Length: 115
Length: 111
Image 1 (cartoon, chains in turn blue, yellow):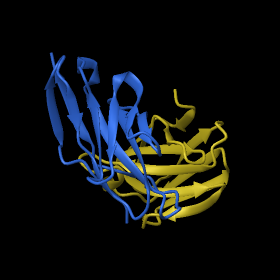
Image 2 (cartoon, rainbow over the protein chains, first blue to last red):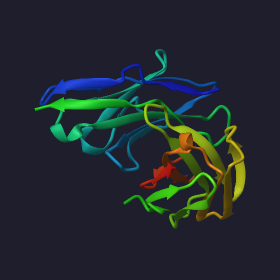
Image 3 (spheres, chains in turn brown, blue):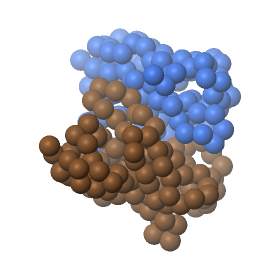
Image 4 (cartoon, each protein chain N blue to C red):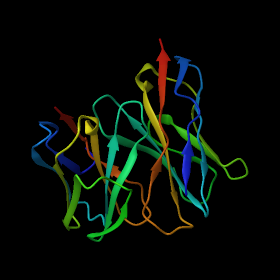
């Protein structure tokens, strides 16, 4: 079965510094990969996705992520963090090898940007 | 706003009550999802519908009963719930190979 791992419960970064939120995945076929952000008492907002093509994908609010097939990773990055980036971040995967509709999420990583 | 609307936003119900959660989208999406988000637990996929047909039931207890009368509406009927069912219930929809769009969620408290 497909799975997603976000190894860090929380990441603390000083404002203005680069940030990375880690994600690794396991699928039987080709993955569709997604990052979402959640602010308190809200639903999940889509940030970016990898379907095919360029390994570096750019998304909303200056975020980007790099697909690494050999390491089965899809880490989220931003060159310069803002306090407003503080939120809960979820990585998700859909296993295209199975041809089903399941989208499985990681447990989430809480990002704290320190002023 | 994502175009996916969930009602009600908050619900408090007793363990013997019957209530329903509603999700609506007019984005033309074919797949609709229910997820459960509990404190300190991963987002749990509950049900998936595709063109009104249920394609996934992730071993969800029968006290949760989904209904998808058409591709725009998804319901989650609740009866005889337990306090541990208190959570944020999220609906999402998707078309083809795009990302899923999420509603704001219903915060359910079972007393």
